[in-house]
Length: 270
View (cartoon, rainbow, N blue to C red):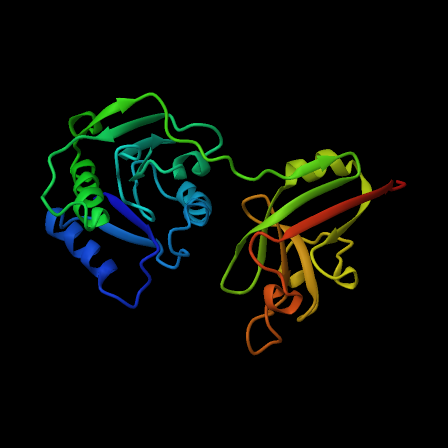
């Protein structure tokens, strides 16, 4: 029984997600469908890539991931099946695949299978589902596509670094208001080298001077910074959701794409 995941910007208010699931079960009744997210900001490929990138490594090899964000194709944007780390990813070649992985994917195939006449109106249902169900039934990707040499690249924003600072940005704000940045632990360690530091993301009085292991390492309502399970610097408020004073995004007035700066001081003495 194959797993097919869905990452879309369709939301749950309309019938679109149910339509996609119904099409999958019609073509492959044994499918196990997992919703990764349907709350992606409309047409935001970078956010879709971030969310799927955090989730897909936890799934078993052979899982098929449908990406229903910016799914339309044209002469410069074909539909692809990408194979990487033993997983399949199906979506439009609009740059999203270059944001999903470290480096280029292992293999990519442009879909060439015969499609229904209405495929352009709802490609997530009429194109991606058909490809996913073919793979789920044990079909090979070369039957429905031709191999391509490269995928379209989007240059993701990388932190700016000098000997005394790292300047990153908020790349995702979750439903708790937690701020996830693009500063990785390895980069922080390489620049910090045991020195004191100051993490700034708004007003100077809100700066954070220490790292912790998780939310609960500080009292309820206190701000906290730590490297999360995927190795990214996260800034949060312990239990800071609506009804408990609000999350970090609202309390500190921080938005997606805002700058997070880390300034390093003198080396700490042992």
